[in-house]
Length: 426
Figure 1 (spheres, one colour):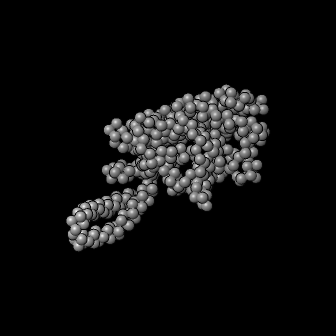
Figure 2 (cartoon, one colour):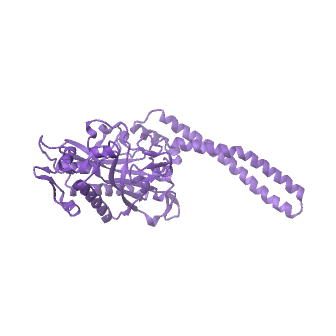
Figure 3 (cartoon, one colour):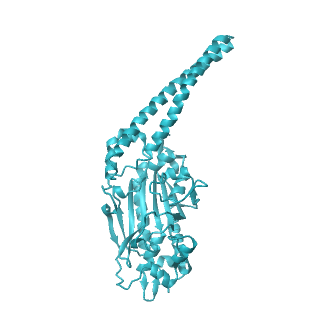
């Protein structure tokens, strides 16, 4: 969530950022309401601070009077203290209500985009940041999409997934399961080489964790919620891993902190339908290796470039043609200040598929989580948080299967062969 001081000092910058996100014009009214309620909160807080000062002063006098044996005078001051406390009671309730109202309004405002983010409403307005790397394979009209290859070589079963759970829950089997596991291990090993500590987090999170990363309030209804236990299935490892340091005050020497984690991810994908979501293109459960970083503000954009290179190296090693997009304001997630999407070319489907998002959230998440660090002057500052997919597996599997199909089977990328223990699926 945006810092109140930032909104107050840079109101026009906030409004300009919201315009680049193509947010509705009435959002400016929410900004005005935030500033108004903050002034009201400060007035109430100031009143209570003055009254607490009066009570402390009177309490000291009461003790002295009792010691001096002046019981009646002491009792009179005690009555005065009780009257002040009664006066404070209503104001304290008003302050709690004002703070809650202010927080709920702040939850409605997304992050301010980085200056490099272009204005736009949808993915059609995204900009190409890095043109496609690698040759685009041309397999001819006989190339099979991955869902047909899966049937031919018994790699995953969508129908069995429907039987067991429902649509969008694929069941991997045989060499398909081994390929999935090989990719997970390869991605984790590569993250380990780059200094990321491996984490195995819970797959369920509480409301505070969801709020901390901006996943809650769930504006698009994409999270699975278990009402009986008041818990949410994670949409990505970003949520539990980033919340490791919720409420922490870190020392400057601890930064940067780099975590990686493999988890299944769960998304309702409400409203997704059509030919473009066939097979593994869009599912309710998929595997992903995530990288998460906590950085000093002055280092976070250099860290973002490091993460871009990390994901680029993975895709290059897998011999998959890819490109990188800079997302426009309207396509950014609620919490992101700047996001780059990696897309891999699917030869059989003849289109680009998103396989990774790498984002800098600046202080938006850390302000919600109250994750700070002490700088060299012992001053507390909010950290910058970043995360990225390295990588999301469902579409990576789809592209490996489609792009590497031959008349003799599906070739396994050389870098994965030590993990799969086979060179070809036939």
